[in-house]
Length: 615
Image (cartoon, rainbow, N blue to C red; front, side, top):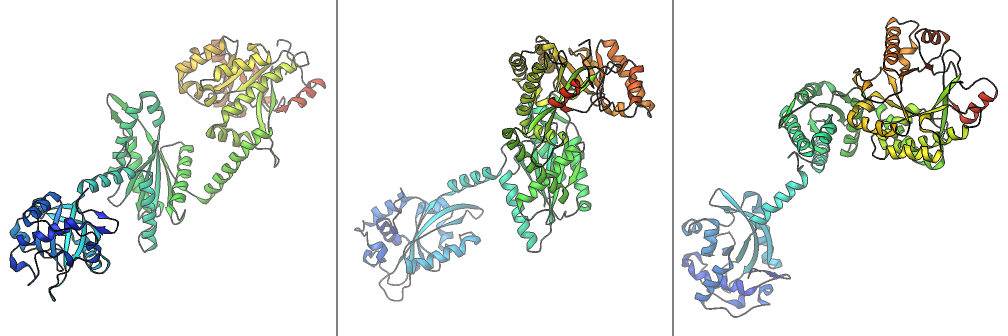
């Protein structure tokens, strides 16, 4: 600990006395007339409380030099009456220079008022402490924690003088600055982080309220980044984030601010851009910059970006709201095909509030048993006898039914689809077992599988458990999977299908023709059937193109040994055209809508529906 440390409110008097003794080293004309070299009894009461005997001058000089830092006796106007040799070396000044300088002149201009206040307070309140920046060698600066105590001579008219001791805390301040920088800087990209950009928005709001420009908040998400990160590793992903961040910085103005929020999301604050027209040029540059290929090592990577924008003050008066609304707009940009821009609207806010309410209700619905399965017959197109049924999830809360088009995407987004999908698979198999030895004996059950379900590591065991618990034969379970699910990771998909095939499970490609155009996967995967997308079936009677597509799909299925099922059949004309082209099965309102198990059983009991003899 420094010899000039504070003890409670009081300063160590021994160190001060050492400094008193050293005033003899200054020329006599620098001392007020008649001031004694050392007079311990004249110290202020706060100092005198711990007064000790004064050492001899030679010993005093040695002790002062050992204290290090800044040790000086200073007049009220800042003139140096004494300064230690070690202090001169620390500040890199000659004694000749110091003889014509003041402590205030050596202090950074921004800290002079603080030092003056400390000198004034020392005269009435006792020893003071303050932290200032002192000039070192005229160009550099050193942070000093100063302790200041008044020394009042007995000789009348001599004026107040001050004893100053300073500790060099430059290293501490530099480390503190580094830590402060780390607190607001993203470690991967070197850009600002979430905390930084939130403060930028707070400052921009305050500036706008004081007459400054309004501004935009843009949230950018890198389309396709997750696939790169998952397949090539985090090192490649991190480098890609760094490169993307630098490209964004290169496209914005000096007055704009940028940060990485986390993951593959970046946020920009753009002063003066308070409408779409003002924003247009910057957004075009950003979209174009991200579209250019990224070279990471030996990998040439392609990305795009989806951008959501909110404006101050139209879309929020806080950092939280502006970021939230820009985020909502960004997801709309993704929904519209990615690689584009979407500006927040109040209608969008209503939709997100509705989605949030719906999401909260879904959790309750699971516990309350509000979800159920309806079953739509899959029939022979000629006899209309039922070969199987497709299990379709329904939600009937107290306020009325919710369309699957609303809750299925939401369940996929919030992760509930795994829970719901697992329940649906088990419930469908149990229902199929209950129909054995009834009029529905022998039919098969078709169940939809989401991408999240299919790629979850536990999916094969989930299917095995559903079959084992229900006791149904594996070949009577058909899993419907879209083309996009299979092509997300073809190698892994093939492994899962082959594993489930050992249980006898069959697989149908749902919405065939509406997704990937490549047909190479058809011969790679152990598929049993194709389901022709309803969009082609709907316009068959009036669209030659749709008729051609359906004819081609049916021919392809026939050549590959797969059965074909036409979805969305609603008219006799559609049915006849499908029969003429050799379609194996049809499904749609022409035969029956999806029905609860009880109503479906009643339709068979009444003779309206019959089980196909071949199943």
